[in-house]
Image (cartoon, rainbow, N blue to C red; front, side, top):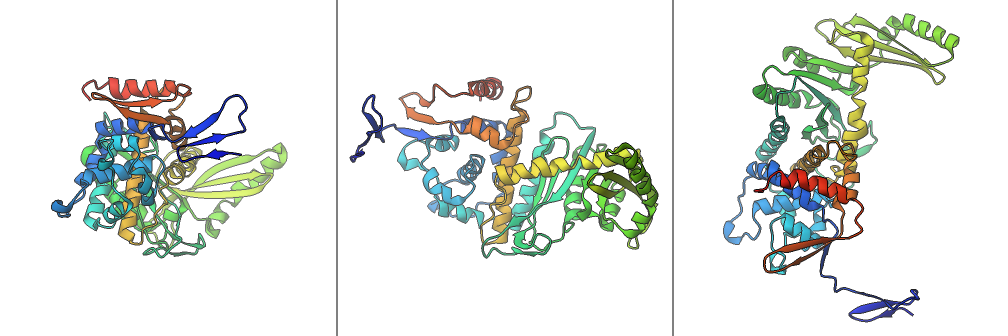
Length: 446
């Protein structure tokens, strides 16, 4: 039988020696790699930029945890994969998380509890949320060592299912569920997140898009007046207001457009030609053409790119509205590259950084949560940038978390040092050596 005493457990299945388990291993953490993200935050000042956007109205006579400590704890919990405030119940004692938040290892210096963090989330006002949104854009702008020649704004939406009585978590007929409907803007070349706006569940895809884009355009051009800005979006953003904004701001745009009967009639010649070629070649055929078209709600004609594809699966006609003057096939291929936003960027934000964990009751608290997850995504992006030239530079965030961050560590202290001891068999020492060289040795005074 298994022997279980107060201080130890002996497992009888092992025949070579007495196999004994106890709880005398000292302070152990499963997140040893969090120290690297803390070091990177020290250089980038992401936590500081968040704190600068918030007003601390608490009576300091009764305050145990500084605002910076609370933000840093919440941000690093999200980065480590603990997306909910309830995780603080146990993590407030985690030795590596405490070190990352500049706390002492003693029990009297534990981190904040779940109720404290929840009060923080529910205290943020609309003006502070706006400043945080500006800080995300500034994080991108300040990361550029030189003005870019071109910036691609990829705008998209995603669904965030709701499972409680959250404010404005409303039914969306397209997704057939109660949800929030966040609006996201990424920079298409770097994958950096520039904006994250929470919206009610019944919001249309294009709702608030013009306001968000105008803010981004003004912020970018205030820094780089001559930069070329391009907008890519799917058919949910095909609205006259968005075209007019882009044209007034001298933006190039390529936006998906609905399949209408007038456009299908104009494309009939191309469709017949593609079908004929398919019968002759017995392989997929793609043809491109363009036309100028004016919908009833438009004030002028605009260029429409028409893609015609015929394959064994059948016919596929797609249309894109644009003010580009490039060859039709090149314009459409450029538009198709926006699929990277859905296939990687949004998936990483939702699945790896858990940005869809918006379970507070108040809408403003959930907007604050979304922005915290956005800052966590930005920090991971910057860490990935430190891995250029390595096999990890294109790794997903979850892969980096498992291979670099989720490292068992024994933490102890002596009179002069705090020791974080890792497993001798850790298989990714090379990753740690690269990061340490680039993050720490590059800043010997850090």
